[in-house]
Image (cartoon, rainbow, N blue to C red; front, top):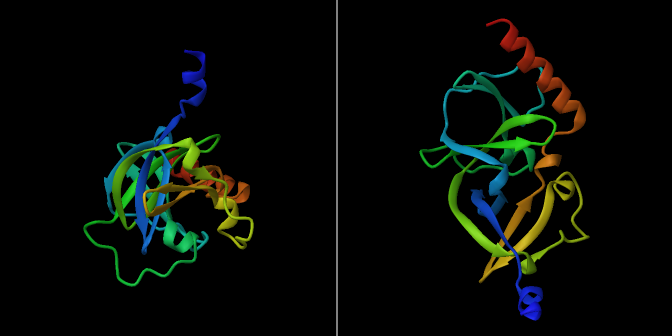
Length: 167
């Protein structure tokens, strides 16, 4: 009986989505909801990957374009498959992540999740929590805590607080 528990591997639930032709995922426990693209209000003088803010049932949510954040080049414009995944960032509240399409909710064993490759360099390295293998698919699991730098989080907090105060 004791041996069976040791051999049991824990499963992780992930929300999988596409950016260009790559498959990514985030922990489902960090996902508040997935929505179609609403009108996004641009923020003046913000970094290029911060698309702006949306009003979601009275909450002002900053929106990040993950393709721009990862320096990926989207071949075509956003379409009816594009979505915003609203996620919880510890200590920063919620942000929206623009993705090309949300594909599914996955359950994968922690045993098949590996640390990011050590030879990954550049802006993407700290954004990757791990890489999961599921059949013949590789799924890049994002580290949501690293999506925004501390400075970017502070700047967004100032903007969203100011915006709430003026309403």
